[in-house]
Each structure stands twice: as C-alpha cells, then as structure tokens.
Image: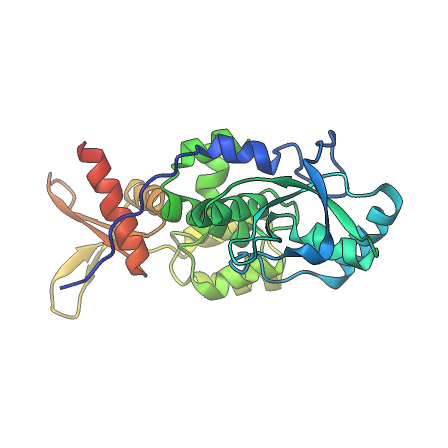
Length: 304
C-alpha cells in the first residue's frame, strides 16, 4: 500500500496578499519599475544570506553585470524582501531579490534597501516561485513549471493564479499543457528552438519528437505545424491491439478534454470512452507522492 503524507494545509495569506509584496508592477526587470517602493530599512550586504531553497539556481553573469551597472547609476529601485534569518538572529534571509543582492555586491554597495516580512518557510518558497514567474526572461517551460508548483505545493487554482498574477486563464492553461509533451520536446522549447505555439500543435499528435524535429528543420510556421500534426494524427479507424481486440483512436473532443484535465491537474490524464456508450474509464498518472497528496487533498476539498 502506498504510504502518503498528510495533505498540506492552506496558507493563512492569500495569493493576492503575497503578490502585494512581490509587486506585480515589476514585470520587465529589476532595473525598470514604474513605482519605487519605500524600504523598511537598509541592511549591510554581509548580514544578508540567500534563501537555500531558492527555486532559481542559475544567475547569468552578463545579466548580473548589466544589473550592477544600472545599480551604480540609479541605485536599487525595488527593495529586497527579506525575513529574519531563522539560523542567525542578527541576520536576514532573502525571500525575493537575490539577483539584486548579488548585483549590489558587484557594484560594491555596502548596504541594500529591504522590506522585512515575517514569512514562514512555506511562504518563503511560495513568494520565491511567484517572483520567478513574474520575470520576463523565463522560458515557457520554466514558467509552466512555476504554475504547476503553485498548484500542487500550495493548492492554487488556475483562476486564482490568473487573477493574482495578471495573466489570462487560457495563457496559464496553454503553458501547463506543454508539460505533457515528451521531455526532449520540452527541452527544445526551453532552448528556444521551438516556440510555445509550435509545441502546442504537438500535444495530441503521434510521435511529437519526430514532428518537432521536422518543424525546426523545415522552419514551418505555426499554421503549417498544425497541418503537419493533423496529417500525422491517427484517424478514427479501428486498430488491432496485440491481444487481437480492436480499438478506435480518440476523437478530437476527447483529446481536447484530456488536454484540459491534464493542464488543470498538472498530471497525465487518459480517457477511454467507447463511442455510443455512456460509461468509460478515466486514468490519472502521478509522478511523485507529492502529486498524489495534492490530488487527494483536491478530491477531499470537493466533497466538503
């Protein structure tokens, strides 16, 4: 029997309340902001430490240098969000703004402006994910992974995320669908070899890896990619299985419903429905026990 952990409890703060700290107006970069927020105080850079659970691990040297040059000229326009360091009472831990902290050291600043918040460990991770999603340089796969984290770690719905983050629900749903593609195709999107629009045409296609390579090699437009995917999607003719029985390939509506459910749950969903019958089978596949926990919590909530 699968041993699972207790479902995570919801946070006291809503997503919109946390977004107020992340500052939704800052959607391009830390160097340009329409409104400068007033800091609670300034803190020496040596008394600040990074968040050890920061989801973003890579900081491009060129971008840090560019930000450092801007800081030398204009200063830090947006304060860092920090909390008292739980491991060092005299210091602070970064909740959001690690790039600004790193760039400030390159610019040889001795102190940085901060907003001090009393966040717990769960809220620290949530704010860090939100801040990363708001960054303009995320590729579609990174952005989609951020949405999935918010859904499964913290129980946020697509509607709530769309409202708080200033995105459309369709934007979030379309990005989440990309996570149902094979990893090799996701890598092509992450590298910029394949656009998100091209990749979406392959979600229900057979052999998406082969089609993705053909799209890139031939430089096809999205419309051409859609035609290629349609031409390579099995028809609704009966197909013989290894056990001798026949099965019919799914129609477009069933595939679309599978895609919508997969995007909503963040897990692979398969629908087996025989034409002309009322009954069928719905299969949900999870990759981690965390996803199973989240699904159980979602089902329990829906019964209440």
